[in-house]
Image (cartoon, rainbow, N blue to C red; front, side, top):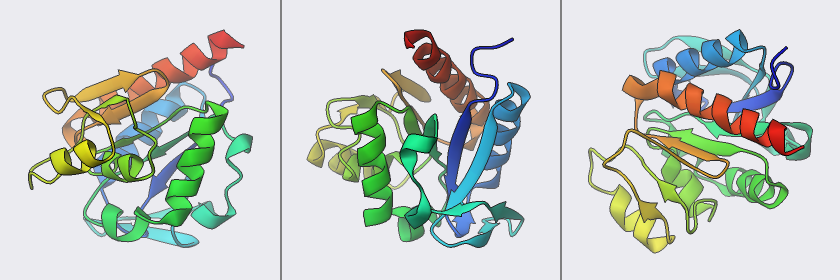
Length: 183
């Protein structure tokens, strides 16, 4: 039996405009390892992806007690900054960092982690087609590793887009296993 079988993690998606490949590939790969995936969003009910597909939302961000989970990871997409760049996300990430619960983000979502000071002093990567990531990373003291597709630093996993969703999921599996070995 795997060390991570039965672990419970949160994938956070924007209520409108999450990236469907990043979400579906990551979720499927984690579930294939026996990890229970809870979907969270800024609004309860359902979420609409950028391709107009939908997913059920299990819990709203403002209802999460992070200590009940083994990890939290933010999915990117065009709606991430509009719907997830907020005090609720910052608070949850702050708590995850404090409690040493694995966390991370893919695509544009690492910008939210940076703004929550959850990447301070960490190496990270992020989507940067608009050339706006470097100033955000610099402003929040993040070590810019944007030349890499996926970066893991301690228990933090960041990735730069849907083309590496499988590698992002593998990074999550590695940090969950690392955390399980520490216990």
